[in-house]
Each structure stands twice: as structure tokens, then as C-alpha cells.
Length: 435
Image (tube, rainbow, N blue to C red; front, side, top):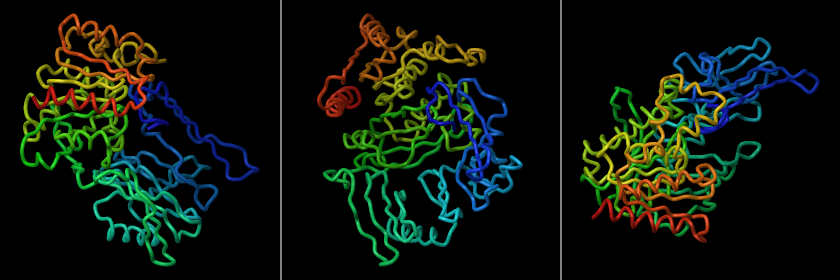
């Protein structure tokens, strides 16, 4: 929703203007200003939500993405003269439409939905033909169309999956040939990669939470050390596909759980808004409930679970989750975490989140540093230092005083920061999840 996927963006502003030709006046067709998830939001915002999707062959009509009667983002034909939706063109019962493709005559070719795996649904005869070629040659893979020739007879597309970092092909319908153009990570032995599998579990309040688990072949059908990996963005979505962090962890014998906690987009408005005012509450509970689900269902060994997060939300969750759920994790890894939620709330134009009765101090790991009691490894880069300043040092000074094992790795001056990161991570997890 809005012009970004992060709850940390200060504002999400979208204003749409339209004119049917070069001589017509510009007309405002939508105007939305909201800090999604923090409280500065009109109660009817999602009822009126709309974003431009494409032109039609009628200058009085355009295509828009808007909320349907099931609170899912769908494709509509929109009358710019009457300022109203006139026809639903495409939708999915359970998921939001994430993209659309039109031909040269502005007819819908296909629409895209991120289900357990990203999928595209063909509408035109040419798109159906393309999909048939994909399904026959690359079953179970994600297809991304990179570019198309003007007359739609040649396609450059990428094939990827959780065990394929990306292969590029040229499909030529004139010659009925398909040729490999190149592929990512040429030195990578893809035979050693582990499959990412979609899962669902029930959170403590009954809400169904989707996610993914990656289990190394060596650990199939038996509990193993588990890393709960939290993505950087609170409002976003972890998608099925290749992730080098995940595959590195799996190659070292760790199963990896990734959770799309409430507040994630792509699952409809109801699931998105279920995360509002729950950043330090139910959103973290969803992640912790995922770790419990993995233990209860034989994926993870109890007392061999580490929570790891990158970026603002992921790093924050890696520190705050063990504070609110004692005994669940036995180590934590945080990469550029947001460490004091109170600072963030004060920076907003709206502090409506405080009016919801939230305990802002309780949501801030910096202010609860005396309660953090497990070993932690933290990485910091320029972006993390700029945002958090000396909060990091004060947090870790408190851990030192409480005799909590801790380590900060500063990657700013490293010539090969990714190599340093992986070496430090491997040693830390080896010590706390395998010994």
C-alpha cells in the first residue's frame, strides 16, 4: 500500500491526476496521505484506495487497482468523468493482485498474484500460449517477464525458484525456439541448495499466519537447529524464491523459518490492518508463535533456536522478541536494528499510536535492555549508525554490566563486508546452536 513497503517510512502520499489528451485540463482522481500502520489514517482509506494500473482504449476510462467487496486489491475499469469504478476486470479470492500487463491496444494480457509462489494468470491468447510454454518447460518455477518486443513475438524472461537464483531466456515465437541467455551466481552449485516450502499455522489469537520453511536435506524428517529469519520491512512480504542468506544458513545445517506476520501486504486489507498498532505486540507474537510451531511440529530442536533479523524491523524483532518471550530463543543476531521505538514514534507527525494505549516504553528494547538475557551478535553499517547513534553502545554496555555475552561487528570499514558477516555469523551459530 502507498509508495513503499516499510512501516518506517514517515508518510505515504499518493496523488493522481488524469487528462485524456494534450489539450484537456488535469483532473485529480485520487489523493491519499497516510502513514500506514501508525495511526495517521482515514477510517475509510482502504474503502477508497486506488492506484493507477494502465490506460484503456477509451480516453474516458483507465484501469486502476482498488479494493473489492472482499477487501482484496483487484483490477477495475474506472470512469474518470464519473469518478467511479464501473467494472471489475480481474481479482483473486484470497490474495491481492500485485501487477498487470497490457498489450499495445490496452487490452489486458495477464495479471499477477503472489500466492505461495508468484504466479501470473493469462487472459489473452498470446499470454496463454506463453504460459503453456513456461508450464511445460519450467514446472514449479517462478517466471518473470523482463521485456517483450513491440509485436509480442519475442520475450526475455527469468526463471527462478528457491533453488535457482535466476536463469534468463529468449523465447522467439517466430522460430519457435528458446535460448538460454545467462544466469546468476555462475559458480554456485545449485544441486546443494535447499527447497523453500510454504507453510501456515495458527497464531495464539486464532489468526492464520503464512510463511516458509527451508530444511536442509540432511535434516529432513528430524528436528534440527532453527534460525527464525525476520525480514527488514514490517509492511511488506517475504516471497518464495532464492535468498542467499537462507541458503547460506541451510548449507550449514540450519533450518530457516520465515514468517509473514500480520501487517504483511498481499493477503488483503484485513490481514494488513490486523497489524496496525501491533508492531511491538501481536506482530512479534506471530513470529514467536511460528518458532513454537516449528518446535511442536518436529522441525526444530527445543533450546536450539536463534532469532535473526536484518534492517529496521527485522533487527528490532531479533532483539525485542526474546524480551517478550523468555526461554524461547537461546541466541539472537541483529543486523542494523532499530533499537528504540520511542525515538521513532516521536519523529512522526502523528502519535496516534500512543492514543491506542500502547506501552511505547515497553516496545523499545533500548529501554528494556536490562531484560535481555541471551547471547547476541550485532552487525552495524553506516545506515544503522546514522539512525541509532550511540543507542547501540548504551544497549551493549548494559549487557556487559549484566554479563550477557555480546558482540558488535562494525562492517563500515571492511573491504569485504559480506564475507566478514558470513564468517562471524557462522562462528556464532556454531557455538550457540550446535555445541
